[in-house]
Image (tube, rainbow, N blue to C red; front, side, top):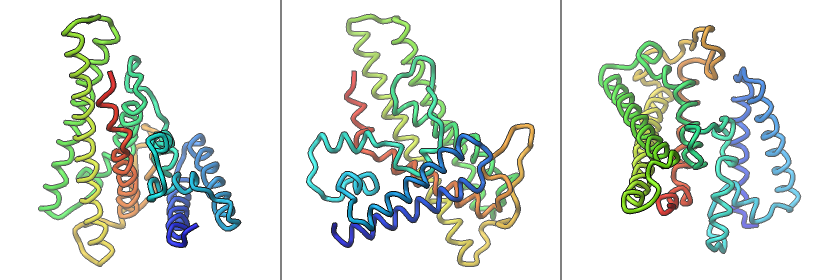
Length: 271
């Protein structure tokens, strides 16, 4: 194996292990802890196989994707199929149907990630928890409007799915129009989600960089996050604000990478 590729795999394993250990330490969900413990065990096995020299090209692709190895279309499809499993934080999210009639795995995954984001992270970004200087507080507020637009886009997509599944349009030009609208709404969902995820990730990266360099864009970086026990355990409960921001940033980083998987965009050509 090329020494540069080996170094990149080692770094990826190290990063994933660090992220998963953080999840294991803070999660109050027993099922999530079980999944994370298994993932950490698999990472340890992969590190041993890497040292032993039994790490193959397929193993490399699981961590690095396309690393300029010889790949055909079938290889790309296999990589796409690996999907969520190669992400340390996304893979701990339980994937649930976006609706009872939605059978598209990609849409169900995106909806599940958004649901997890809303439950675990969205409230942390509000003014009650995260105190920012005036200009950056205004910038922060724009992301709530963008998130609302994503939810509207998802609802529009699921409405079309409902009409198709209900047999309201069996055939003909109107049926073709409905299927075309479904593809367009899917791409709209992808674009809006991607813009939101990348934009918020960059914003949180700016806040973290400022904090790590002694700045004061975040006015309460050491405040401990606390949530109402009536709503159940929260992933970030007990963390300091700065730690919580970094966790959200890492989640968005993986979400953004997921949205850029080439196979995801192939959905626009499906019937």
